[in-house]
Every structure is written in C-alpha cells, then in structure tokens.
Image 1 (cartoon, one colour):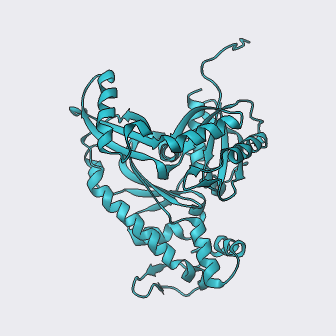
Image 2: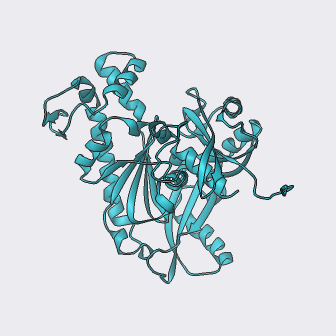
Image 3: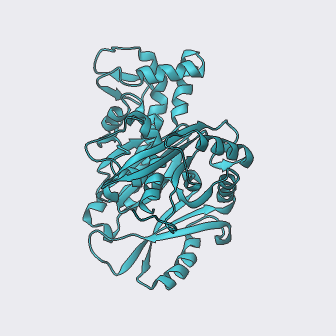
Length: 383
C-alpha cells in the first residue's frame, strides 16, 4: 500500500465562532459522500465577543484550545482550520465589470470596490469571485466582492494562532451557510436563507451559484426567551424551557393582526397561549424585517447571467440556526409571507439522500451547526 509522505492538500476542519458559542466539525470522505468524523461545541461567556468584535483574544484562544481537545468522535489530529468571520461585519456586493483578463480584473475590483464599501481600501481585507453564469454568457462579468475591516479580522487570526492552530482560510458565514444548504451549490430560482441565531438573525439571498445579498438584524432566539421571561415574570432559564416545549406549535392556524398586537385564533387554543402572546411582538418584528428583505430582492437581484427566473420573487425560504427549531415558526412565516418556508437540511451536500441527520448529530441540533458544516465541507473538498 503506497504511503503518502508529503501532500500540499492538508487535512483541516471547520470552526464556527459566534458571539456566545463556537462549533467544530470535521468531515471525512466515504466513497461518493462524506461522513461526520468529529464535532463539538463550547459556550463563550458574554463579553469575550460582542457584535462580531473580539474583545479578549486570550480568553477566546483558551476556549478554542479546550474545545478542540474535547471533540466527540475522532480525535482531531490536524491543526489546520477553516474558520468563520462574522456576517454583520462583512460587506458583500455583486458588481458588473466588462470582460477582461485576470490581471486587469484584480486592478479593476480594487478600484471599483471603493464605491461600495464605507471604509478606505487600506483598512479592509478584500476578496472576490466571478459568478459563473447559468443562463447565457453576457458581455460583462458579475463579480461578487467581499470585504471585512482588518480590525475585525486580525483578532480572529490571532486568537486561532494563540490556540495552537493554523488558519488555512477565513470565510464569511453566508458563504459557508450557502454551501451547506443549497443542493449542489446552485439554484436557478432565488432562495432566501435565514440563519436564526442566539444573538442575531442573518438574511442571505442566493441565486445561481452565489449569495447576492446579505444583511443582519438584532432580532434573535434569545430575544424570544427574554420576551417570555418578561411577560411571565420568570427567569431566563425557565423561559427557555417553556419556549422549547410550547413554541408556536400550540395552534393549528394563526393569523396575526397589527391592530392591537394581539392574535386572532382560527382554532381553539390547545396549549398555554401565554407563550404565544409573549412572542407576538418579536414574531411581528421578524416578519416585517423579512418582508423588507423580500422587497429589496425584487429590485436588486436581477442579473442577466442568472436568467429570467432571477427576476421573480423569492421562490422559497430555508431556515437554519438554533432558533429554527421553534415549534410552528416555519408555518407561521409561510402564512404571513405567502412564501414556502422550510426547515433547511444542512446535510444535503454531505450525506447520501434521503438521510437528513447522523446518529451523532440530530437534525434539530445540526441546524445550529450549518455554518460549521459548510466550513467543514469546504475543508474536505479542498483536501
């Protein structure tokens, strides 16, 4: 059996770092599909990362180092990592440029990007990719540019290195999420991905082969728990338990009415309606924010290379993140938005169909691992 002495394709794993937690995933290749080799997570105490900005590199490095040493499954035998960067600090924009050589494109992007980002070019890290056309070959290039402030990125690199790891690549969360959720990495119809997390919610409009637009709002799963806590005068831990138990699934059909911030029930309540009443303002806020995103998409995602279907409204909405597990959320959003809202499958590009989970990581739990799974998928494909 031949032994591989040296390979330029180094084995690596995915590391998703958010304000209050981190998640680790390593995949291995099993024939034509992939398997879950290692996974783990750790809480990050409040204050170490705030709004995507690292405030304490040493504390984060210690958490990363401990978490990587305690993963479930196979022990991590590599120090190479592909890590996430915060969505709320990134600038993503699709621009159009004339067809040109790769060398000229490098110069043109750096020149054009100053018209789209609010920071001097010298204060950001910049990357770009040409979006492959799926409809025809127009006389221009659609180029996706991504930029993040150096002051945001550098502490992530420093923290990872202090943990004894080597960052092979850093990637904005939206790109990792899309890799995990969009089957085969392409969609002829526009799709809205919603990452409903603990501290914020991210919107990602995907069409063709690439995210076209991203935004973040401060509505979060934790806000829902706090609303229950305040409304029912109970502590946050108890509110979290009630949210998970009842959610919004106690009703078969619900129609929200803005008039009195109350709820019109089309069927008799079968569980404790206090949970729903506490969540109505947050649900209404989330719904309005999604509508704004959908309205934006109608005027901003049409590109000739994406074909006539890209000019249509969003075809479906996919939910991920831990907050996506809230009972009844997908049904209520579908009703209010008049658009199919589905719980995403983060394994769609990893496991052989029709599998939607692994024995080690359930479907519900894996929704909060979407970013980490997308990062790990890149790692194993580049190996």
